[in-house]
Length: 416
Image (cartoon, rainbow, N blue to C red):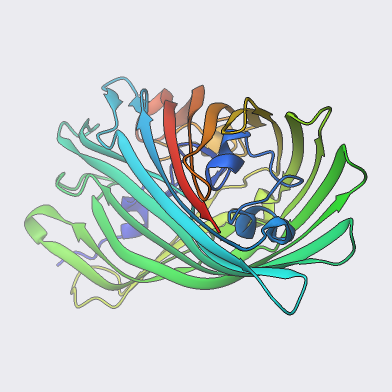
């Protein structure tokens, strides 16, 4: 029976395996409601349990005990792939994210300790009915997610200076399906990748410094964390020749990037807080080449081991964030923010499974004290439209990906 060169058969589909919905690269713009509703301008402000994932020095501002639980609902309004045969909206129009944290001031030290759970980022696109270049109607999908469990500590070193650190247990997973039910053709075979994941450790350090009653500064450093996805399985469809299963699947080349953030907060009066952040994100070192390896098969005609390497060459990114919090009265605070980060993905490395990475976000929201201990924070994040046009060996020239939508954010907090 003829032996197939499957390296040539996976022509498209693996150029990258994530699709960013609402992010700076594959990171969300903020964590927790206040951080997000101030546009991610949180480095000099961080003062709730989301500080564990933004600037752990901010934990020192928490007195007593604090619990935060938050949820975010994403509604995409134009998450789409377009080519000469398609102008198709993604089928997964809604995404739900959740997280929260608990922090408690220590009795014997000028420190506050906490632990939190965070949906870090990643996203996915599911197109159940794409018209393929091979005359079929088939599914094209990629789902990628990253979550963290993060304990940390923030300490008041002097009256003006606080420092902190957090360690994260990071979980990432991925699943893909690309024209799996389409009969094989020269240069192509459909496939399904399932179950590849990883657990890794990462850390973050931070500081906040109060210059005076009006000005505060903040800085944080996040170390790079490699995310080698292993332990999965894969299947290739060879039509009349049958299905080939690979019992070992690994996808390597993804990482959470090294980051350096600096911020400033200004209170011109007792009711108004203004904040700004610059965040350098080292994507060029985090996502460069993506290597997929299939191995361990009982097939008599497929290669025992296959390796596919796809250059990605992401660019470094500088994110600009501006935020405002206005104390309307004793019970109500109003929020607004803006976040901008240029798309780090080179145009020639765009793909049908990589929607246009959003660049601009506008946020509006409020916080309302329900009683002496409970507070509700809520708001909306607008994901402004982004479109990328690129040439594809499978979908032809001038293929297009589009992205647009909005988040609704909620957080319930109790401090006692």
